[in-house]
Amino acid sequence: MTYAIQAEGLVKRFGETVALNGVSLTARPGTVLGVLGPNGAGKTTAVRILATLLRPDGGRATVDGHDVVRDAHQVRQLIGLTGQYASVDEMLTGTENLVMIGRLLGLSRADAKARAAELLERFDLWDARDRATKTYSGGMRRRLDLSASLVGRPSVLFLDEPTTGLDPHARGGLWDTVRGLVDDGVTVLLTTQYLEEADQLADDIVVIDRGQVIANGTPDQLKTQVGGQVLQVRPADERDRETVAGLVSVVVGEGMQIEGDLVTAPVTDPAVLPTVVRRLDDAGVVVAELSLRKSSLDEVFLALTGHRAEAAEATPELVTEGIRA
Amino acid sequence: MTASTLTPPRTLTRRVSPAATLRHTATLAWRSLVQIKHNPMELIDLSLQPIMFVLLFTYVFGGQMSGDPAKYLQFALPGIIAQNAMFATMNTGFMLNTDLTKGVFDRLRSLPIGRMSPLAGRIVADTVKQAWSMAILLAVGMLIGFRLKTNVGDLFLAFLLLLVFSLAFSWIAVLIGVLVDEPDKVQIFGFTTIFPLSFTSSAFARVDTMPGWLQAWVKVNPVTNLADATRGLLNGGAVASPVIKSLVWAAALAVVFAPLAVRALRRRV
Image (tube, each protein chain N blue to C red):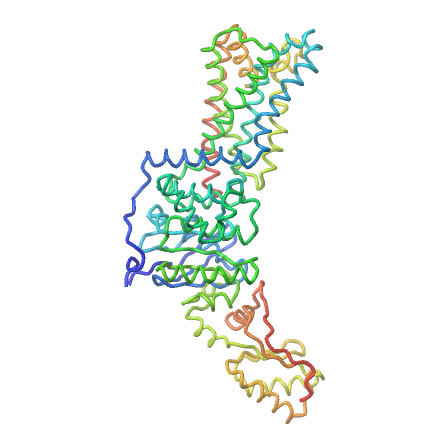
């Protein structure tokens, strides 16, 4: 099988900093590959190399079998790129931006205009088509950025943190767009800091930290590996901490951690919660906090690397405080 | 399953043909010119500022300088045109830096187009803007009393020389535009270097009225050559020497700064 995207041992240094330290990844044609990692993990560097904007210092990569360094011109004919660094021209209108790209891709004036109109309509920008894009809202800008990367009907699309800074509604809209593109057979590589986004969209996920791949697999495999949820127990009396820790580790198994007076553990089966409550009750321990919440990116990192990610976000799902067990 | 089963197969070209490179450059030059429509400030830079210069120099300084504003205008307009051309080159660096910092340049580089087309398109557009500014300056000057003492052929040569010189000089602007991290720094560079450079020349005042130490510098300043050549071509007088010196300067600037600028651009992106 020819992979739509294939990278082997990519290395990139910026002076003393090693941005990528041997990153390998593959994306099957017509699927979404999610590249997950915190700020500064090397996601953007990897995308820039794959999109021919940056030369790797080591390793190699291909898009549809074309080498991104040697056959860069061929690769550029296949890809679309959307990211904060690949932007539209603020001084031009939506139409002018898309017509310019169409013309650069070799379309005739009439075809470029028709393609621009089609995309503006599809991305709900028709009414704003003749306004300079500097007047667009953040969501509109992002949709125009995406339109710009679709003018040439790419078979491989790179989306670098496409939803960062978008409100939930706009984010949902973008997810639908990505799903639609995949239905049309486009291969998408999407970088994100949000576990939920990768979970929603990706067929396969690669987790990058400090320039290295630290895990990969389907979303389900990954969740099993790191535990889908996190149990948190804070005893009312700090002296009960050891009792709580012992009891939690018996119920949950591996991965229990103690931070101050808080005991946390990854769990895959939500049914452990009542069990823990019962055991705490039996032991006569009073807890100040007992909660079960989804794994955040932070926990994924903690579970995979043993250190915390920097741009972490917790999503509390169920918080029960002051339970007298 | 192969990559092409789901998306229609396409024929890929192996390289950008010279004809395509020209087309890309033209499209990108069009883009830089169309921007003016949505950015009236740029039109003011290109038109109003030169007009203001002509009016101020003529009516504020003219009487004192030559005893009569009209007489001074005849002397100074060629110098003002030369000075304005130098200032306008900074626009190339300013806009290039804007493209680099805003990410437009990366978008363009991810497209299958000639590698130097984005820069070439910029330069072509800026040359058009230069010609526009020169025409405005000349028109305003003639409106308030400037008279062409030579002929249209010499006028054409003067404009050609100014365009060639500013094209060469703009490589400095390109280099600065690539090196600095925000567009405003290009402006600051422009003001702190081009201001003194263009004023310590024969553009606005006769060299023999200046102190000796200043004359020594003014005589080697390339702006003096450019101003003298322009003045000669519009007002009559000896032109061979200043024209040749201006062209030599232009060649030297291009030979030194074009490779530096291109190398810096390759490094940055």
